[in-house]
Image (cartoon, rainbow, N blue to C red; front, side, top):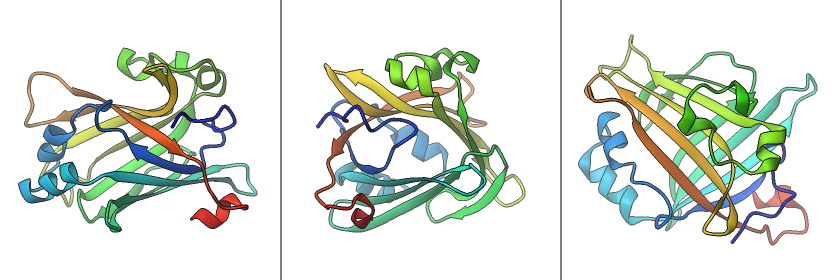
Length: 197
């Protein structure tokens, strides 16, 4: 289902299902992040749902909390993004020790062409969410970094939530891996959207 026009990068709350047929494979990215073959197979077999809650605190700082669930009710990772560009460590069940930071970015400020292209006009007007993370060198034996931009694109004629990803690893010498992840929107059936979470 296409995302409605009132769901934007400044109001991203809702449920989104990964559209595997429109998304690029992330198997090689997961492998280079140290995710086992068995876990990667499970991830590829199940459908992924993102439950996103988007709020602004009293200081005017945006918070985007994302709960990932695989089909069958299997819990995945959680993303708690605070858009203040402050580094925060995290111990992730899948990726291990990581450090990340996030902010809102004007599209024209981005230098990576893959991250800045193909957004809808409302995303260009409001800015993308720029999320970056890297393995914690003091705790993680693997060395990798990932940059993502979140926004909305027209894919197959419909407006959809999209994450564009560039991934670099010390074990991959021929340049970064580029991946576009496309999600279908599901309208919240609840009279109050917050009760969906």
